[in-house]
Image 1 (cartoon, rainbow, N blue to C red):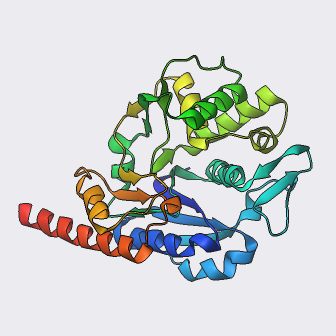
Image 2 (image 1 turned 90 degrees about the horizontal axis):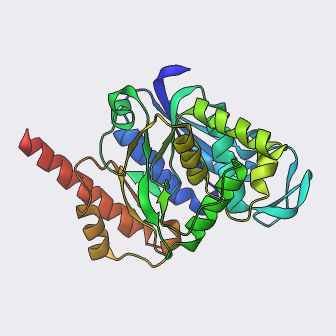
Image 3 (image 1 turned 180 degrees about the vertical axis):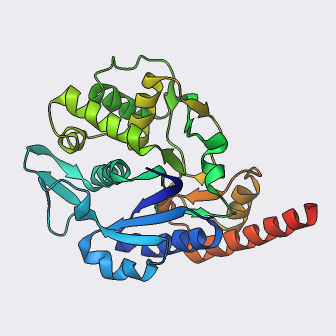
Length: 296
């Protein structure tokens, strides 16, 4: 394990290239020493994404991380698993398999999951991601309420994969956050547990779920293990709705960021204009940097 290195892991594809390019640009601008970026993309998109390669950014074929048993259906974002033909593995689930596999294969001290629609907005070091030299698990008790039925299904599938009792009717803990930090050795233990419980390769067991969250699975596993430090403070300002933000709404979102926030996540599903988003973020970063200089 490299104790002085953190990997940021980003699965992406051609439709999100412009967003991923902005994420990459922000990492180049703001990341401190020892922080590397691993972009994982379909073989057909490798040439496009190779433009983002640099000293601290590598681009990888998704086939390095998906089981050979998973066969891609041409022209569709769906895979068939030869070990378990039904249900087919949808693209959203396959992307999460890639994150888990890449994290488990990492030799870094920690990995950070950062989808293409996240962008960093301030300087950050390894110490910002690992305060006091240890990983902190994001945990928001009671945040999964009746208005979040899909989150509840994520809880149910995670409990099933870990051979735990299904959740009750009470509000549940949320572990979904941006950016999301994992410890590779913990991920390896998690996947071994899934295989022991299911009696199947972990990609087959997880790929058979219709509703699944990799962050929920990791969080529930770590909470069961015990002894992990937790926080309810996310390091990103977030917008997860599926309606676009205009410039005033973007400015309000950014101004809401606490001083320790280092990133912003605006869901790609919101269809927010990327040039408008980029200008708002650049203006905010410049104004915050200027304010901090004045405060010194």
